[in-house]
Image (cartoon, rainbow, N blue to C red; front, top):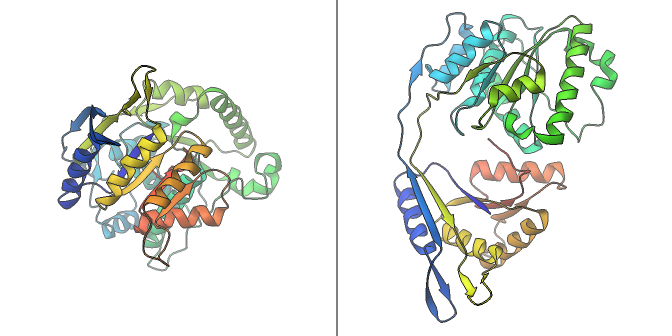
Length: 360
């Protein structure tokens, strides 16, 4: 069971986390506090300051102005490095940590190319619908700033399992896309392993054959969590050479990692307390301290059980909005979008999810 607290913890939030961790550290049995400390290991990573680099000289001034409107006057070093590789026509894979701004590593060169040539197209691939919707909202917000001066709007659309259509089998209907396809963005590259990765590799080779048929040769821009062989994975999936960007220039807040082991309830049989019951107790401690929370469960069944446990234990006033939500594959698109929006806006205090929830 994995926990993630939101947002970055500073000030009162940091103190709340420390208090919650202190209460988690000791389990409580039926007769009062038990002797078993269930936080077996704690790791603290100190804060890191940012390292910046200027925009590449060829960057379209409209893109610079749009980013400046969002407070981005210069790029982190890894963003500038990835941008420069793409401008030079090289495929690139970026493996900097979570929340380091990898999104701009592909959005910046894509929007720059479209501003310079409105016929340019880009295809984004995400492993989950939640992540696709989150990135759609991010891209829409940036596009609105780019086109605020009345210039031609940039269209952004999603295609997923909820869309009753097909692309590669009906490529003549998508001829305009393939003729002008300049970029293929693959986010969360580390997810494409095993049979899933083999399947994607075949699809990407088919995609490239279709692109050659229409006279295009897209650049691949990939991002990944930190893995041992990101360049090898990218090259294996696409059959193309890649440049690697691995040194992050992003700032990082202080982080805490806690390893929690449920206490022993029957020493003779070596039985520990149910991990779902312990996850419930830990989550409630975070909620009591007003910390927004995501709990990742291993199965749909565990997700539903834990969601029920938390709702029973942490209900708001009668008639108030549901602040504890479950999230898994099989939910209708409108329901998923509602939960994702509630997380971003802070109305949802806790989500129990399978790995279907990936918001970057």
